[in-house]
Image (cartoon, rainbow, N blue to C red; front, side, top):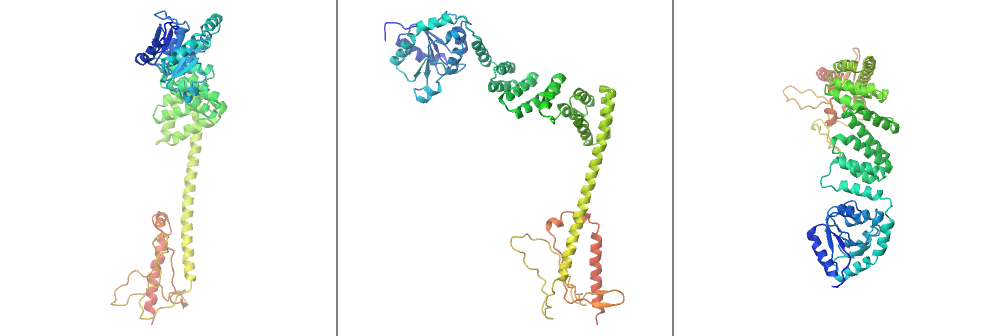
Length: 489
């Protein structure tokens, strides 16, 4: 405690209740006049003389907390130092603790002194006495700065004042974004325009601002992406001049960029709004590359259920919207439609040819497998009384089971004996040319290539024109074997 009072202090805190502890410490330190505020913007305007205080209070020292109602204490110090008359204003910044990390974090924010919590009244008084000693120098600086430029301070207050309004609208963020573009503050501009996109009326302008900000940062891919979004937004809003300007600027950097006019017109055509589609095409006709124009419209017609009807309706709308030029454009679109239809038919024929080629290759592979099986050595015949061994060998490990058709010796059933199961063994098969008969090699086995499940269900056999011939050959083989057995003595 001391009998001599210290100069008046402006105490800034997050709220009035939180300021009670600091106010009591200031009174114990000997401060007689204390004014408490919670808004950094309001305090800055009063200190700069831009707003009058209801109490006529003129502080000599500012004691600022680390958090205020509308900004941080570091931000308040930085804003205050933008005004020439407030460059030397003593500011004591109270930190949440006295750690070295907090002191380094606030280094360079503009505070005159730092004091960490919890602090003693003695430490607070020492800081205030030291700051009060600079009062004569402060008076001289204020007198010398009367004619100094305060534009930077006004711009900072304007920016923070808009962003820190209790109710902020997208229009406010848009104005801040434009100010940041003028000052080359690209990151701040991007953040502001991101909030401005919520308003549909200024969405296109905000997207243009985003494009300019990303170009300022050197990211050309995002610049082109946002420019394309802005052009599409202007087309949907039917702001034709802005749409043409944005798309023309995009074509300078990316000649192959998609036309927003064509995209919107194709969507309207699918919805049956041909007059609006024709109007959109007419507005973008001059800036849209001719190579995309007719092809894209023809593709839309070709994908419709009734391409000819869609084209006729569009031709009528183009004639009303563009006159003779629309009729010429309709002829070009019809030529493109015919060309696309021919290409589609050619691709369909090529696909059918490739499908037939795959089937023929499969049949040829089966034929080669049968010839290789005929050329294989014949195993020794089993004894007469030995039972027929028809079991197939087990499949190799790791290989999937497949359906297998085996052609072996065919033994006609004896009279009175039961018909055996499907066991086609061809024994002593004889081929006759009408004049000579020669016996085929005994015990000759023909193995047909096995079919996998994928081949059996692929549908290729259903499309094979030679399937009936294959079945006829199998029936004829069975008949010849039976006849040969019956003719043997």
